[in-house]
Image (cartoon, rainbow, N blue to C red):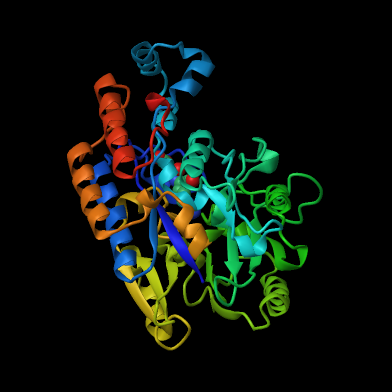
Length: 446
Ligand code: SUG
């Protein structure tokens, strides 16, 4: 037996709105807004509780610690903690904000994962994303790798690779551009890699307004190191118009689960050809047709899909075999999305819809699907991971108490460089590693 475990990121205590992500309309729009880290953490925990209550396995990934003093030292700020913070305080707001971003919470970007049934050595392969496209996100990779190694530590079952060589030619944004289709989780899957541009060779059309982050070359390197069977891979370019409309990752316009692809009609370049190729390959891999739910621009305009994050919903397989769409509450506020959902829920492979309030994350462009990394594990693999990160009712209670105790309910950019605030962050994260039984994972603990 194998199951999909959703590993959600816990948002860090430095959560704020800094407008750091050009091309991500929510991030650009909400720059400078006062954030509420406590509400952000509790909203994320509530989503985990909803999934757990549906009897679906739920894991947790701790945040990386901010700021990264090692990088600040590397950039000439010296070695003394308080002196570094003092010098950093005189930099521009954007510069400071990048070092304090809580962006590691969007764990769909933390890595690409191939289950053991798909890989050459029958181990689960994990490539942490280098996230080179945005400086504040590239700062995540080192600690994220250490966190994966602390959780998936049994080398008989897991390979946690180093991130790909860090250059925009190999810009890798993790699973937000990767979907695995299968009949059931233990069967070999078709791994679908969507890229925004090619670093070398010919690009037919590229986005013009906003940058494409994921490259084809990065996706190919991941498939190579994971040892995937070439017959079970499809690479396809994201529709540049979708990137220009604010779909900075493919998971803003498409989501798949098992044998279902739910996407906007403008998600992929030459979409008809993409669908024919996916159907052909899926039939060969899974001996079953792929189900499609494609939403036309007349039903939900692309701009509305980006605003509501309809396709950033999670599609969850319930124990009953039905599919649940876990959508952000913003979908309830959109007339076109509501009209569309009313016409399909219960009439198609989407059987039920449930809404979650993730407003603090949504204001930075992170919906339900951005907040989770999907890891397919068989029973034995699941037993070997660090059990402290698997959600239970008791753990949930501990984490809610922890967030209420350690998190502020208001944070402004002026607060960031205060040594007292940084001590608060470290105290919170130190307590978290104890709750999750992770040992020393943060630089300040080593
Ligand atoms: O990389 N936002 C993130 C949102 C990531 C969403 N993930 C997926 N679609 N899978 C990003 O653009 C905003 C931070 C700020 O502006 O303060 C930010 O990094």
